[in-house]
Image 1: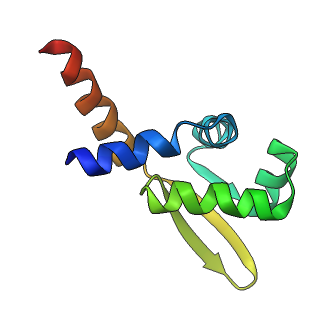
Image 2 (image 1 turned 45 degrees about the vertical axis):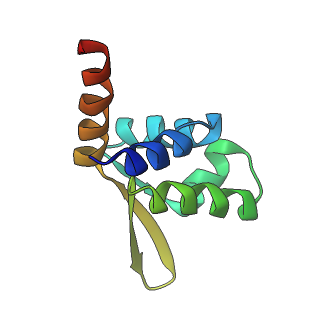
Length: 92
């Protein structure tokens, strides 16, 4: 993974609300609906949209739209690759 992508993911992970979203998703099989995020974080819809956009742009979430319903799938492969790459820094 390139350093620029590592930086983007690190920045996305640098917020407690985004970490809460990812933690909740991992416990739900890697899936969440937009309405669940609002109640989970107790944030207003514009703030939730900002956090989702940040996670999606980093590649950590894959959006799905079915009618008017928005849901997101955790990109576990990217998260595992990120963790592996970061761990390699400690191994050097």
